Each structure stands twice: as C-alpha cells, then as structure tokens.
Amino acid sequence: MVKKKSSYACNACGQKAVVWGGKCSGCNAWNTMEEVVEREEPANSHRYSNWSGTKATLVDLRNAKTVTHVRWDTGLTEFNRVLGGGLVKGSVVLVGGDPGIGKSTLLMQVVGHLSPRAKTLYVSGEESPDQLRMRAERLGLGEASIQVFPETELEEILAMMDEQRPDIMVVDSIQTVFSSQLTSAPGNVAQVKECAAQLNKKAKSMGIALFLVGHVTKEGNLAGPRVLEHIVDAVLYFEGESGSAFRMVRAFKNRFGSVNELGVFAMGEKGLEEVSNPSSLFLTAHEHPVPGTCILAALEGNRPFLVEVQALVEDAPTPNPKRFAAGVDTNRLQMLLAVLNKHASVVAFDQNVYVKIVGGVRLTEPAADLPLMLAAHSSLVDRPLPKGMVAFGEVGLAGEIRPVTDALTRLKEAAKLGFTQAMVPLACKHNNLASVKGIDVTYVSRVDQAIGLLRELKAAA
Image 1 (cartoon, rainbow, N blue to C red):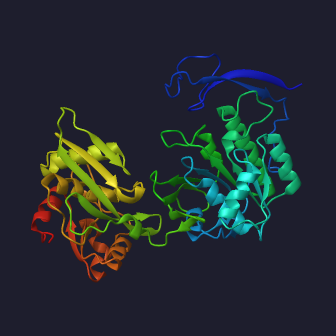
Image 2: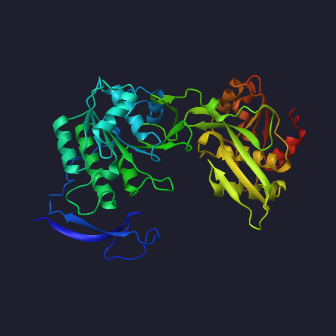
Image 3: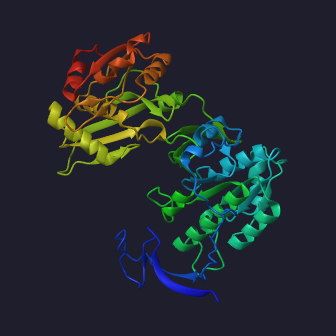
C-alpha cells in the first residue's frame, strides 16, 4: 500500500517543517506555512525511477557524442534570438511575466506559426476554448490547426500527451495544474513542484518542446519554489512598463544558448510585432539638450543598442532624502552616489535622486555605471552633457573606471546612429576604438577625471 505523510511547507520559499510554525525558518516570512500531504512511495517503485526509459551507464567525457540540436523557427526573429537560434526539440521553457503583458499572445503566435509543420497541443487552465478562439482570430490564426485541451488535472494532461504525442506543447499556466495524488490546492508549493517535475519527465522522454507559463509575485519573481527554475532548460521573463505598447523578453537561463539575450516587441492589433531597431525605442528626441540625461551604449547578449539614462536631482525638503530607481537597482544607485561623494567631491546626500531608464528596459550590466553618474551630476549642476555624446563603463568603489566587454561593437552602433562623442574607460583603448569613423573618443580612468573632463568638453548648444 502507498502511505501518505503530512508535513508543512512555506508557500514563498518551499522550506519544509515537521510541525506548523507562524514564521518560516527559511525566508523569515510570517503565516506562510501550509500543510502538505504527499505520497510515500514503496521501495523500488518511485514514480521518477528510470524516467528516461534507459539504464544509466558510466561515460568517459572524451568519448561522449556531440549532439546537434534540432531547432524550429518560431516565426519571430526576436524570439529566436532569445531562445538561442530557435526552439529546441525536447526542451522545457518557463515563461514568466506580469498579468496581461502578452505571454499567452506570444505563445499562441508561436504554436500558430509552427502548426503546419508540427503537431501542437495547447493546455489551457485559465481560458476556455472560446476565449482562445477569439484570440487566434485576432492574431490572424483562425485557420491554424491548434489542438486545445482545457484541463487542469495533471493525470489527464499526461494521458492526453500519450494519446496525442505532440511535437510542441503549451501549459498555461503551471500554477493552475494540480495532481489528484496530493491534497493541497493548485498553486501550492508541493503541487507546482510535482506537476512541473512530472511534465518535465514526460516531455523529455517523448521529445516534446514544452512551454510552461508561470505567474509572478508582486515583487516580479516567479511564483512558487525556485526548483521550478532549476528543472527547466530555459527561463524567459517578459518586461515592460504598464500602459506601454513595448515589451522585452529576456533569457535569464538557457541551456541551449546565451543568457541575457533581449528580444524587443511592440503590442499591436494583431499581436506582438518585432522591433528590429531597439535604439529607436529607447532614445528620446529632445528639441534641445536637457540636463540629467546621458546616452548609454548598452549590450544585451550579442546585441548592441543605445538607451537613454535620465536622472533628476533636487533639494530634499525633508531630513531623509528619497532614492528612486526604475530600470536599475536602487542599492546600485546608492553605491554610485557614495563613490561620487568620496572620489569626485560631488555631494548629493542631501538631495532627492530619481533615476529612470527610458522605454522600460531593465539594465543589469555594469557598463551603465558611468552614464548613471554623469546623468546625476548633470542634473545636480543643471548643465546638459555635450550634444551627441554616449558613454559606458563600470565604476569601482575605489573610484576607478573599469573596462567592459565589446567596446568596439558598442561604439560602432553609436556611430551608426550619428553620435559624435564618446566617453569610455581607458582600459578599452587597446580595442582599436579609433578605427570607428565619425566619433571623437575620450578615455577616462577615474571618476574625478570624468567629471573634470565634462567641464572641458564643448558645451551643448
């Protein structure tokens, strides 16, 4: 007989406990411990035993075969870029994002494009077939052969996978799926772990390319245990400002391609449309140069693009000045202000400082440090930066400006868009940046030197 055992798990971090407690010992959250009843499998009959269908053997890595992965063209060049060149057969991809940002729309476009060449199955736990039909007609996919299965019970979904044997499958969403073998509610930590693991096992054994749609918390993280992100092959996040038509899809994990690749889309009447030139999205056409703005030559994955960094520094009417950052980490802003004070004698601790990255993109690379400092200083002294200037560079706590990757690629993108001046780290000089025509390059090695050179550069008209 299969026995059942009861324990308690935190619905925020997944920490388990034998008895209930008001506070989770793992993440220190209150009132998050919920009872979980799980099956206790008999010996030698675990449901995950030998899931691949073959017995594992010892392999010398030097003799391991190199496998060329079969990829499908999703019909969206930007999405192919994020996936590493296309959708890999047998891969499991987790897609997360805020409600209504376009996750279901994107995946409907993908399965609709691939339906003539591959057998598709769309498992919907949130929308009815009528609602999906309305979306397909709006996207121009009314005649696409997409098999829809409105079911949330895991055992029924697994049985349908055996019956249909699809090539591509979407589960929307993983938080709505539940296993009848567990007594906890859908979305519970134990349910999400069990359902994701079972679907991953089945998809791998059958060679199905599986998309799992995941909910996010109010902090913007994927809801459920972090093990959900570990068992999948790729983790994609939708980014974008509320009310904006532009969307960014970023890869945070990809076993079949590079991470931090960025795909840029615009939400239109017929679904998500590709934006081939992201720089046009992230740059603002000011009639005259304004204080507090600096153009960053950024690099996401292998793609260079220019983005505008804006800063507003004002006198604080209260004893506790505010720090707000949209698109960058607030702690990072605090650190850069401290470096400005220590190594460039630019005092902003008694000022309110607001920083924003135009277009809703979130910057994670360290090359944004120098443009952030230049924009903050420009707003503080109420003087615009020189016209046609871009900058990039990492700033250290000792006040040094460190090199960044692919400086030549960044500079070529800036020159292509008509920029004429650039402030870059001195350590990037060996990258032959002088070969880029049309751009006057200024090299800096320290923060105080960068601030001092701004006064010497030609002022904006």
